[in-house]
Length: 190
Image (cartoon, rainbow, N blue to C red; front, side, top):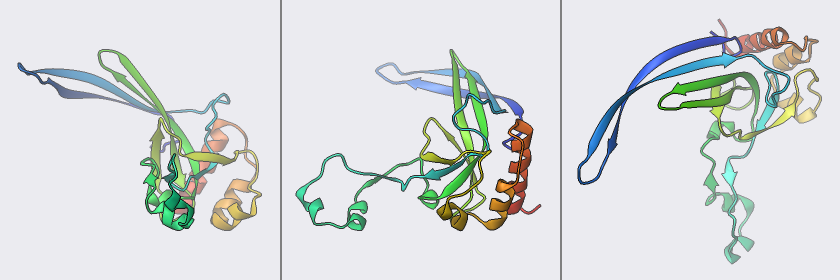
């Protein structure tokens, strides 16, 4: 099953919570998890087929010291903290959003998480698929019905992917799914 096709999976998990203290107690519980890949909606900001660019993965310090005045940018980054959501292989790389997902946990209350699924287009791990929820460490660079026209994107993305992306496609869920399947075949030979 591909992330851009609708699918639903229901599973049950067992867990144990422990509450410490003078008289520790443990409680066994059971909860249901529903994972599903959902179709796109025109109301969503992150949609299938959009090309995004990741940040450099660093959080600049909020306070500078006088030592930073004399250090180069490269030397400063040695001591900056990294954003844990951005893997090192994704620093300043381009990716395409290939799906949206929803997780519903039915515990003592209902918890719902939404997220996006991306596939790397450039970098050392081109073709790698990863789920992101709650944090979106990237910015939108190209919206699906538009063609890729920026020179830096045309140079970075493989030419066969650019050719598939720039072909005329319908702006429907089925049109997006077909385009994503063709791009997926470029990176994952079956």
